[in-house]
Length: 544
Image (tube, rainbow, N blue to C red; front, side, top):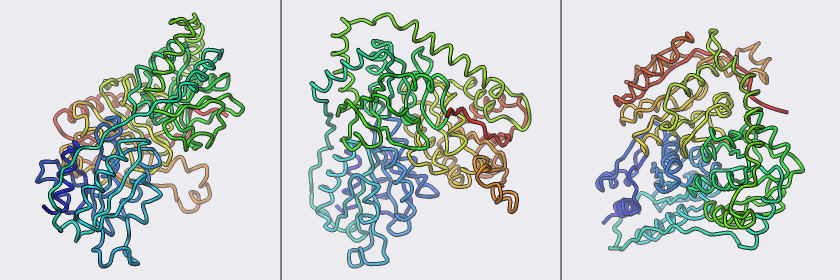
């Protein structure tokens, strides 16, 4: 068989159900011959975002795969791979390569050479008989250790070459547990702490350690927050929830982090970013992570554990239960009352914005009505970069795991559309929403047509304030002289022109009915875009 067909057969054996891509790449046709659904996008970056979401919302149990043309296709794909690398998402990237006689010769773009810093494994195959081995190595890397992209570049002449018969066994998934003595030290510190806070990252999602996280929190009677990537790992309606950490946060999170005598990070990196909550200086920190690269990288840690989040939490539960004689110490009422009081104060401060009846619309009113109209437990939602992220993340309260796709190590505008589409591919039974602004749609909006054509009925909620509002404070002169932050468009009409449902909403009383109509359209198999005409909001829930 040809090398392209060999790759497709391996994808099938690895359980790949979708191959997202953009031609010409011979693997796409070969995959279709293997009954792998091929999905063609309008630009490479969005396709990678879709593959990204397939992996995220399945905890990496299903691996998103993307294939693209050598040269320009590979060049266009760089941003999507970099985003997945920054946010630690396992995807398999299969670029074509230039024919071997001109491979790696300037100016021909080499995926191997250029993607090494945004993948955990990159390989260039120059012998057709090496294809099965290269794919085995790639899948072993993508399914084990820290989740990140892997890449196998196959020159076009290799794809057409014959591959000898081969046997292929799907790559194993292996987990590592932390060192027992280190577990004992962390357990001792957690039990001794008077005001511990648990900070959960997306490692909890990948390990599917939601039950263990909740059990440890309830045993310790410790409040829980998450990173943006970890959001939904702990139900935010739980009395011990502080909500998620991001650029904007809740009052109760700010208070408890600053009052903590021990912060326990589980399945997180503690990476310094403008889009994640900063750990207060001078705090005692215990850090449990899968990757030693994260330890002492951005925050100094006193106690550390290396291992899978589920195995780590299970080991800690044994030790903590032993120290507490199997039951909590009676702190729950005091802790949860303190959380509830602060949350009540915070929401009272924000309720005028969340229920505002003015026009242009308050984006907070749009989000508040959205959350109280859809079935949150059966909805997967994601934000976009900038204002949408900072407006939604403190207030949206997921109740089930993997129902919020948070991101922010790097913040490419337009990322959310592909995430919602990929989530819908993986979970066709759920309502999948992306919340974005008029800046983000300018980057990736054309792929709403992909949602229509490929029958991926997402709900796209767009806040249109005819401006790059988050930049107004830093571009005053450019705005006054040249209107540099002004942008415009009728995006509801745009959605309709592409074959979807589009509706523009300008009045507060019309928000909920429009959402209900749009949700009904998605149930009919039609992608929907709701364009809300909103104010140029510059207020966020932030604390100095």
